[in-house]
Image 1 (cartoon, chains in turn brown, orange, cyan, blue):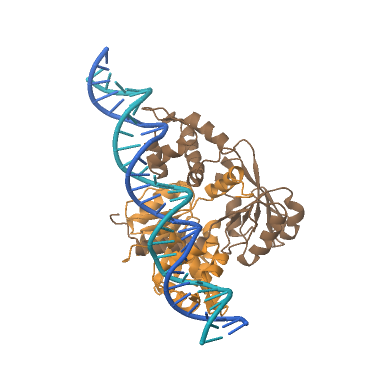
Image 2: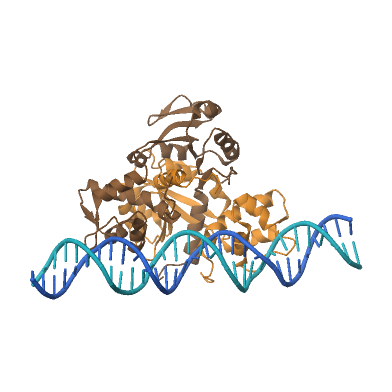
Length: 211
Length: 211
DNA sequence: AAAAAGTCGTGATGTTATTCACAAATTAAT
DNA sequence: ATTAATTTGTGAATAACATCACGACTTTTT
């Protein structure tokens, strides 16, 4: 909420660093250099050092970074001490994949409620997350401010409106629809078809052979 | 394969433009301006004009763009005339979501084979795509050069190696693992946990209220 | 037929992100 | 103790992208 000088590109890499440091720590590794980190997460080592430097001098010259210290630092930076509740709208295949995705359990983000239109799903739970009917969205949302949208694209706009009215200010949108939201709401788009198409486009037009 | 001057950022937006133009065309719309397009796909209109300009002068001043013409142009640019075959490795929830994702049917990308380790899935099909056992990967891959990786992350590295050996040069990796590949192989990462975490991070640190 | 409104394409500028390259500091080796 | 090898943190250079702003041209209106 405060030191607003961290570049967005850096912010996007933080979760990646965090996860990898966690691995290292569990392996009992005590120190790590930007070079090692670079090979593991496939980010240039200078970029990693630059990224870290926005948070101050976290490393030691000639030594590298202390894994435990760095991990603790990221934990607090990424607000891992307070749990963020997330709602998932649309418990189809993609939604279910999210509910079962164990990597989310490593950090303090919890999908606490799911919603679906299918009556046979309503009342059940997936991996402990209860499924409500989408018509109950307004009553059940109850202060949750982040939502994952994995519904058919035809539903996207209408549901988004409800979410926003209920105070949601962050939406992870897996729908191909480009939803319209007020200025204060942040939407991140992930469009599976676009990702696949653009990969294919790159392969055809930007061969990597000796780039 | 040729005019290598299109910026990557532009290339990533092409599928988005293409899809939207398709919608317009189906609605019978004959012309469209960069301003309209901008509102629909949420990309600045100057950026859209700039993107299009890399392909030449496609529009007409005071008029805008002819939908049909533009669509035809993109169709050939995105190589929509030849089918690209894609293999999907891992037919779990996420993989199944892909197989059922109808937006992929609008373009000439086809997931033609799926692979899974679960014997009860092998031999069946999902939406017409046959499922083979992962052990048959080498025999069945058979010239396919693009793969979607939706397996547990513990399997990622081993399967990647097989894929690369069989000539795959494009991988869409949904695994949190940062896989290692030879230089000529292009990997696009989509990490669901990272996406969610970074959205949460942005919400906490970059409130949008009046940005 | 003239004026007004709309729109592209792009040079110029601004912004953000990446990478180079090296002094300073530390650790490890001899 | 000295020397050699590491490795950070960062100023400076480069690269990639986005946006502004406006001339030129087209369409629409009066």
